[in-house]
Amino acid sequence: MRYIIETFRSLKDPRQPWKIRHRLSDILAISIIAIMCGATSSAQIAKYGVLREEWLRKFLSLENGMPHRLTVERVLSLLNAKEFQRLFTQIMQKLQTITKGSIVALDGKAFHSCTGEDGKTHVMYMVSAWCDANKLTLGQIQTQEKSNEITAIPELLALLDIKGSIVTIDAIGCQHNIVKMIKKDKKADYCIGLKGNQGTMYSEMSLYAQDCLNDRLMNDQYVQCSTLEKGHGRIEKRVYTLFPDLSWFKNRKQWYGLASLVRVDSTRTVGIKTPTYETRYYITSLTSIENAARAIRAHWGIENRLHWVLDVVMREDGWATKQASLAANLATIRKLALAFLRNTDIPNAQNLSGPLKMWACALDSRSLEFALFGSILFS
Image 1 (cartoon, rainbow, N blue to C red):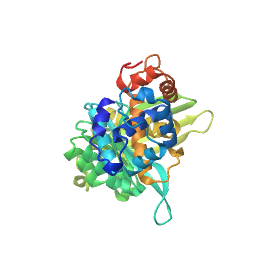
Image 2: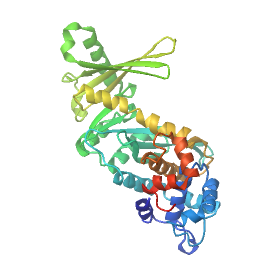
Image 3: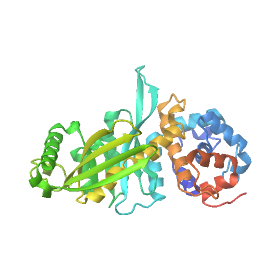
Image 4: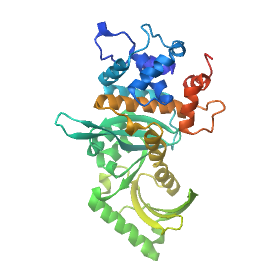
């Protein structure tokens, strides 16, 4: 927390200097802590500050008391969202180590609707990078439309130090420039979904895979492995098939580092219902079926452990925020709050769920101090 507060001081304060009564770093720190304790609006952030002022003064300056609700809302709406996201990415990479072979998943999430100057409702998206091994966000970039993820992904990749990792993206990231940037510029591997947005390539690859599986004489053209998962009344079997010989693919040189095609056949049974079947394809620079299967499975961690938690635990979609910049900055603060909750084992609360950890931080100063500082400092 102290490192983050010091880093926040490098942010450009959007207010006029003669009107500043509360430090920007103090407002941001109060917002993070309040959200860790369950706040879901700027009014609740300000109220939390008032109720916990004595404790907050132990490590924040607060020369002019606690900021008013309108001050919190105004400052967070004026703050440059793009610069704040850049600083967030810098902080998150400083706080964690990416080991060789780690899975880094990139995915976009719709997180806010706002009314633009044209009077129409626009949905904002946040493209995030998620490290599955650390269970933490590495960085994020805001974009205004789903289609803009194509331009946001290279922008986010440019901020990341992911050498030696395996980058996973769904089909929207299946672009020449993106795979080249991952493999050549970032010195990482990739495993990217292949769908109809690459129509000709998808058709040729899927037909080739099907021909290999149907012809017994082509058994040496692929390797397979399978997984079986059971839980919550659900059984899901996945068969992963890797095709390492793509010399026949005439456009192979356009896809930098392309080494293999992966096909995943899933059979899912829930209770006594009729099983459902799904087949998916991926292009990858990997040559190991085990690593490819691990990367594909780990990609869903960004949905289950990040997006779902933001929606259900932190109620991201329920925040009543009209301004786009305020919504974007609050989304960044929520990820910082989640990092504190995730990145520490609170004494006597190691096995608690996300909501119960938030509850523990709200009720017990010692738990909150341990989450923020890694030890009990003030109690």
